Length: 340
Ligand code: ADP
Image (cartoon, rainbow, N blue to C red; front, side, top):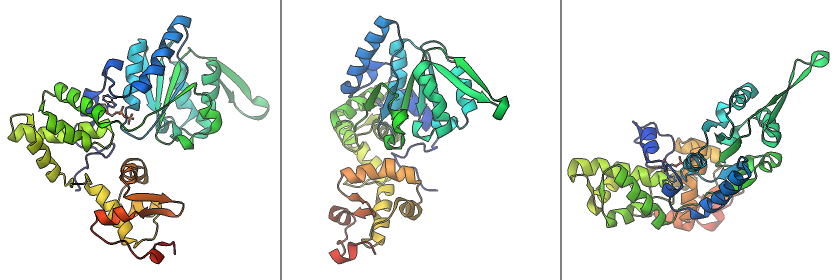
């Protein structure tokens, strides 16, 4: 079996989910490195509390692992509000949604992850709930049709998505405020690593922190996973002390190279190289590397693009000259790189 990479979402490696949960920020003071996201939320909380109303509906957008779920949890804590968490795929029928909405307590923060995967039919039921805290649905058809209205307790919907473009305009416009999560700076990631190390009772020195932050791809989830991997080696070989040597040894075991490329990155780059300069669509690329299309598009590719190794074109994905170089190969002659 292929060992999990350090940045794959949802890898079912023993206790990964519990591990993440244990490091989740509990309130705004622990949500590090994104003051620009907290500032508008603080204002909204104050205004809503003063008016004795719920906070307006919020849309959190950004790549996986940037803290959308964490911020929703911290927000509920700050508001002292009940939190209900679900996801687009879990709400496949209108019945599922009505079941949840009808049981919300006043002021609940309802977090729907992957909200772009909500079926259209379910999404439309949500409109009335968002606009008027009311759901309307029709029983039976034809002459027997009856319209039922159900009043709901006021609530705040927090929708999270990695694919904002997939939301319909009427849905998007119902969110009073959009928060865009961007990759974190290295200094923010360093702060997150230091906090996580304290929680895990690991000694983490400055040099090790800097290397880990540098390899975290702007993503707290990656930072914490790399720390977790180093912890195992530190525990076995270095008295729980993560120093530069432990980090380097971890990277060599995980096959993270000097450029920071991991095995899944290299597989993507190699698949593109094998296409000999012809662009590959996401589907073909997924088949070639044995990864889900979403994992490639949302987790692997964004970093490769930021590193200037891969480019997206309307015809598909291509290696850049720098990408060929990273594989130690020469780019094919220009005439070969046009789509056949
Ligand atoms: P998303 O919902 O965007 O996929 P998560 O909220 O699940 O991301 O974040 C993944 C992990 O990264 C969390 O368990 C948490 O430990 C850590 N994390 C994310 N953002 C922050 C932050 N701003 N400060 C501290 N830790 C964070």
